[in-house]
Length: 236
Image 1 (cartoon, one colour):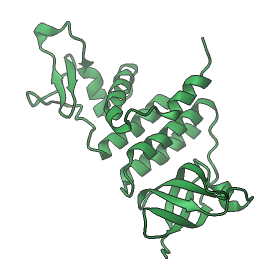
Image 2 (image 1 turned 120 degrees about the horizontal axis):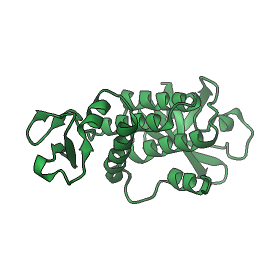
Image 3 (image 1 turned 180 degrees about the horizontal axis):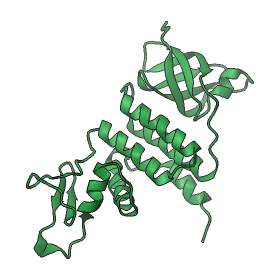
């Protein structure tokens, strides 16, 4: 038995046998962990009502295998209510965590970014900035966030007025002045991102970069949150 209390959020839950759930948690202390919540599926217990996404929890688990048993769970704050687009964004954040974060990898960086993302979404902040900041945190933890300030080929600082290509697993490389017909990423936007500044230009650049950098981590299976958002988005 383990008496340690974990700080956690529910990422996903799915039915298990007739009366139970398997719940994927994201915890501060142990990273992503899955556990069986026994006998709660058809009950009206407090435990079942707490096993919802975007609810701050603390919990105790038991078991030596990768799939734990949920012993105790309690809330530590009111549930976060997210309407409309912010709900889809939060579902995307949860899905990224579940698809990318390895089992058992604790990350203060990503957990703090996760909490910041939920808080920003609940406060109706700029969803593009919120998502990019969270994506940056995951990429940083996975060692894939590039240095926005460095031309890796010449080991020179990125210049505001130049254009840059991005080379996977390497970084940004300046486009020669005699090849300016090639479109790249503006140095101005890269330097803004290095400072955490999201202008209209740097937001567009960040979106393209994050989509490309996350693709190998996510894999070929489509994200359900993206599919759901596409179906629910108003047609024009």
